[in-house]
Image 1 (tube, rainbow, N blue to C red):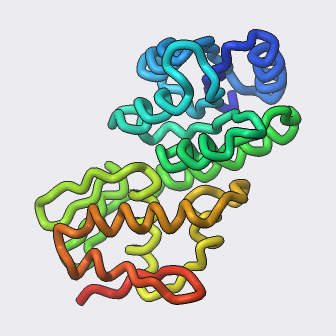
Image 2 (cartoon, rainbow, N blue to C red):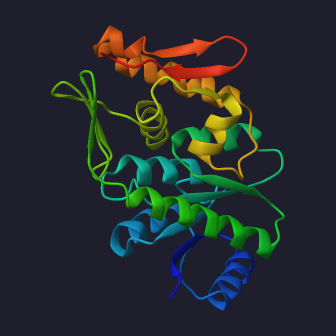
Length: 231
């Protein structure tokens, strides 16, 4: 079995089409037709990945994404959002809430399968990384997805954590905004690079418990960002 996928969409025909193609590819498929059912099923069944429509009755897809990504026991489950063409703002918000990728309706089954495989591959690779990294007063626990300044635990979103992890494991290396999008959001996401600036700004605020660490994320004018080595 290739993995367990939760498909969340209030349109039965879309769920059936996705389910047919995923099962054909070897996946086990769970279904939910509203936001609350999606949250409950995620907690009870721990799927390997969630395909999540944004337009849902009751709790909408963005709130479902926020609830799943903010809960420690489900935060590592990757989410692929399904959006309409005119929902550019929702795409950015969803990605900032921690969604891993998005697809715009209408989409092909082949493209959805490719995205799912790529996101699962990245997720499995990340979960295999274990250990603890200390850079100055900053400590990252890879197996628990936690970051600390001294004994103070940082409350980071999944994307903020991934960005900080990338910086801390590559001190001194300059990353362009496009490279950060590729490495943190995935190569399939061709989004507005402004979302990178927003995440860097939020990350600096959360690191401001220690000015040296906050200022270690340096802007390289006209290029992108780098994380200065902390002695």
